[in-house]
Image (tube, rainbow, N blue to C red; front, side):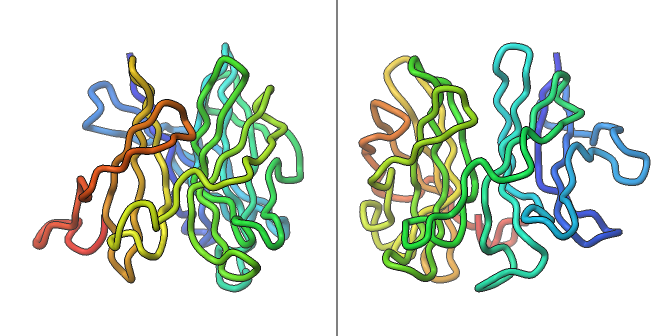
Length: 240
């Protein structure tokens, strides 16, 4: 009878990002779950000196009685900037509150020279008839294919992933309002196909776009204009 929201939190003691949990009975009023005396809501924190000192863009999928948390991790000081390179990790839980990493190393690393040369961010994982499909944001600021794109991967067990060769969506397929790329996907399955929501990047502008298609990987029919824009005078007056 409750909604759960997993989100990126900031640990004020370490100044590092962590994975947190809040709950709600109506989807509007949220409270952090009392998982930790020092930091409410804490469900997974980074490991100092390891590749996942900071944790961001978590996504949880429930498979039977198991909760699977996919997250992006990066060191406190990165290259070419903080937050890079970022790889994908995975942790599991039986109650959705206490998570344990499935392995010390990432389950998906950036590929040198690839579309995700510098980072794997914002994973979305959905169940399919053949196993699992993932759509994520690949960042490449160096290498052979610079840009920010939505990429895809498939898996039989949700732990070992095979990348798709071609991007799932590029900014060039969206329009000038996504000339610098697309990021942060969200997928919703319907009776007739799939809906894709994404962040579009144009200089410092950020808006939300929408598309629909027959599979988690498209091909996507993109709505011509953004569906959500910044609104002056609100808490979202700069970027969305």
